[in-house]
Amino acid sequence: MAKITARKRSDSEKPKALRRQGWVPGVVYGPHLPSTPIAVEYKVLERLVAEITRSTRIELEYDGERHFVFIKELQRDPITDRFLHVDFYAPEPGQIMSLDVPIRLVGTPAGVKAGGILEHIHEEIPVEGPLEAIPPYIEVDISDLGLDEALLVKDLPLPEGLRPLLPEDEAVVNILPPKVLVTEEAEEEAAEAPEAPAEEAAPPEEEGES
Image (tube, rainbow, N blue to C red; front, top):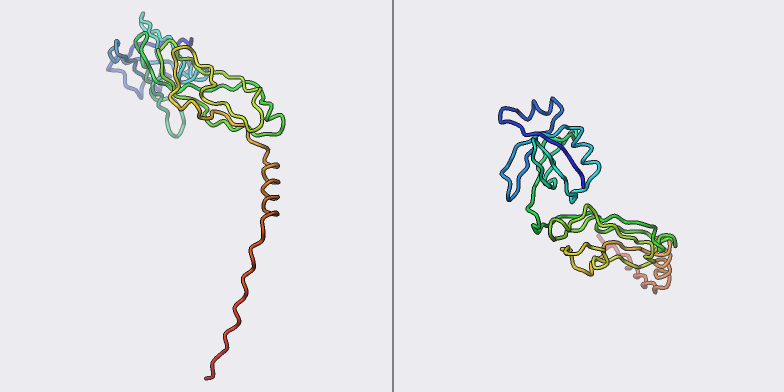
């Protein structure tokens, strides 16, 4: 579990002034927690974001309080990409939540070693379950996937109590045949196809007498 330390901020502290001083204004809230303005050191938040996913549970401490939170929203400057504001959401223990969890693939598929192409269709998957069951990512070994084989949603090793919000038979990863083979097959099919008869050219029209 990731950890981060912040501090409460007063109404007199303006967001622009905080940013100039190296802080990111934010807020933490939840069903059992009234909205509380906070500030996080920019470098601290930067390190945290580099280490987590959007489904990582975070231990947030400020002014003697401790809450388990998720990053609900992270606003960035559209030009500089610097953090402008962060929202932390503190769910109740056992609360059922819906989040997108990243898929982390491990291993090189046998089909790729045979010349196939890996198609990663869903890099993250929407899931629903109790707070404690939601992982920062779902790791799955795809070493045994051969050509023309797929990893389906039902094949994912989800923690107990977690259910996917996609159809069970939907593909997460496909191993496609090599492009060269596909091209050769298409060329062979085109060569075997009967040629369409050429249209006869219409005879030229005779010019009438003037």
